[in-house]
Image 1 (tube, rainbow, N blue to C red):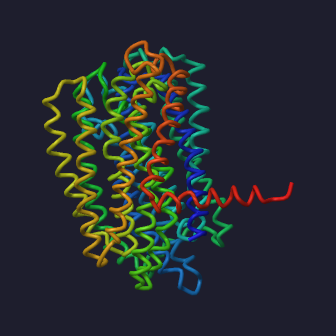
Image 2 (cartoon, rainbow, N blue to C red):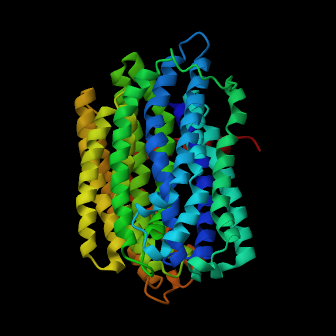
Image 3 (cartoon, rainbow, N blue to C red):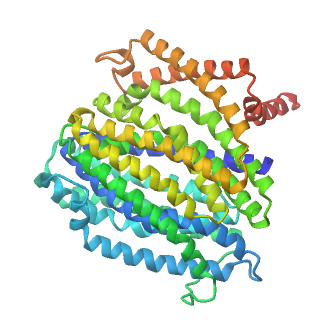
Length: 535
C-alpha cells in the first residue's frame, strides 16, 4: 500500500503542475480571444472536433484494453516487447490514417457541431490546424499506457507539462504579435498567420507531449522498432474487448455532439462551447489531481488481482481507492461551488456566465469521479461490456435532458446543459456500483457509505461557513471585492478555501472519520520524522 501511496503522490504532483500550467494557458487563451465572443465559440467548436474523434478511436479503447493486455503479455519470454512494438506500430498507422481523413473532411465535421453559419469558416480554418492532434493524442495515450503498465507512472503524468509550456509560449507570441484585441475580430479579420499561430501552436504542444515519451522507454527496458507483423499476438481478443468500449465511446460522443449543438444555439454574446470548455477545465482540476492519480496507481494492482483471481484483494483495493477519492473530491466540489464566481473572475470579466456553468458541472463532480473508478475496476476485470450499459443509461438521460434545454433562455442554456450532465452522472454512478457489486459479490458498500455520509455532512458545514465568509468579503455582485479583479478573486478564493478546509477537517474529526486519519497519516508521519531528525 505504501508503494501505491508514493505512486499516487507522484502522479498527483505531476498532474498539479500540469493543471496549474493548464490554467495559465487557458487564462492566456481567454485574454487572446475572450469567452463569449465570435472567435471564442469558433475556436472552442474547432478544438472539440479532434478531441471527440480521439476519444472514439483511442482514449477509451486503449484505457480499456491496453493495461490488462500488457499485464498478460508480460509473462512471455521477451517480457511482452514484441507485443508492444506490434501494438504501437498498428496504433500509429490507424491514428495517422484517421487524422489525415479527418483533416480532409474538416468542413463537414465542423458542420456537425451546430456552429452558426457566420462562424463556420473561421471554425473550419482552426480545425485544419487542430485535427492533426488526433495522431499525437493517440500516440501519447498509447505510449503512456505502456509505461503505466510497466509501473513507470511519472513520464505519462509529467509530459503534459511540456505541452503546456509550448502552448503558453505560442500564446504569449500571439498576444505580443496581435494583442488581446483579437477577441473582438470576426471571420474576415483573422489572417492566416493568426490562425496558424493560435491553433498550430496548440498542435505543436501535443506533438511534443507525445514524442518525448519515447525517451523514457529505454528506462523500462523497451526499444521501439516498427513491426508490421500483427498476427499471433492475440489482438483479436483485444479487438473483441474494444468493441464494447468503441460502442460506449460512440454513444458518449453522440451525447457530446448534441450538447455542443444546443450550447452553440445560444449565439454570440452568451456562454457556449468555449465557456463550457473552460468550466470543464476547472472541473477537471480536482478530478485529475485526485481521482485520476489515485485510480492510475491502483489500476494495475487491480488488474493483477483480477488476473490471479484474488477478488478479496480486488475489493479491498477498490474500497480503499473509492474512499480516498471521496475524502478529497467531496471537499473540492464544495469549495469550488462556493468560490465559483471568484474563480471565474480570474479568467474573465464575464464571470457570471462562466460561473453558472462551472457550478452546474460541479454538482456532479463526486459521482463523475466514482464512475471513473468503477469503469477502471471493470476494465481491470477484463469486462468492457458492462461499462457500455451504464454509460448508455447516462447518454439516454443526457440526450433527453439536453434537448429540453432548447426551451430555456440563451443566458442560462449552457449552464442547463452542464446541469443535465451532472444529473446523468448520479444515475450512471448508482448503476455502475450496483453492477460492480453483482459482478464481484460486493464492493464494501457499507464501509463506503459510512464514509460518504460523514464527508457530505462535513462538506455541508463547510459550504455554510464558506458562503458566510464570502458574504462578509462583499459577496459576488458587480463591483464586490471578490469579483473586482483577478488578484482580488484569487485572494478571496484562497481565504474562503482555507476557512472551508478548517471547517471540513474539524467536522470529520468530530464525526470520528477513520478515513481522515488514514488520509493524513503519510503527512503526519513525514512531519514526525522531520521533527525527530537531528539538527
